[in-house]
Image (cartoon, rainbow, N blue to C red; front, top):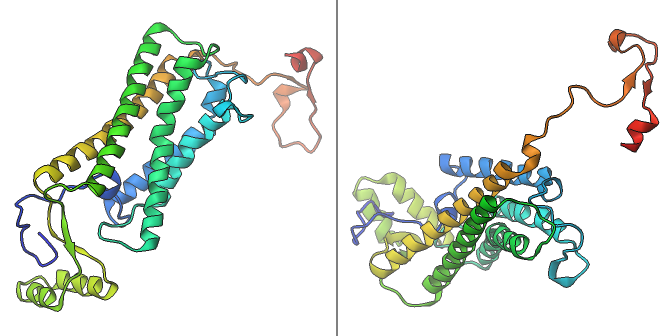
Length: 287
């Protein structure tokens, strides 16, 4: 239903144009889960330092970004997680906001999406096609090429259709308007006092509320835009999981104890006042 409590005249339920529009409200359960999981993912990717730690991603120091002095590994390690944090912290403004501040916030949000999804796809493309140092088997290379192309293609389609929806005429987009006093009175008389209060607040702030949902070509474009963003994210996740699955470091066996010899190690408990000395041989240092 719209803000007056009436069913949408188009007969279609509201469909978001992107995942960000679906989870933009942090007060909802979906918004809370989105912010929590994406923040954890960004921090985990950032602190893993996987471009330096995994040989199926490590490209050496010879590969530079844009032929400048900035190492490619640094850019790959920092750009996608920073973009993901921008995407989460700077949530997209609710539909209907047309102020200059909301436009700036939306631009920052989209920049974060490009850094995250587009950055991952481009970095994978450079790694797979340009690096002579990276080590991987044939099945891994095939899978990573598939997920890399899927990420870039769906991300590009998402951005292209989004710009087309914004600048080209299509029938029939979502209809929004600032509520009038007649709309507020109608909502109250129809038995929707809560919606009437929301309409009063929107009228005071000059915010546009949804009157009718999209239909026709515009609705099809929204479907394509939404699912292309979803597929781009899934391909990015699948690519990262492929890197983890095939990395040789996943099968390393660690020592049961840290290297080095302790004096009287059996009696060392941390409860004595006497200082315990850690003795490390020259061989340990050279290793």
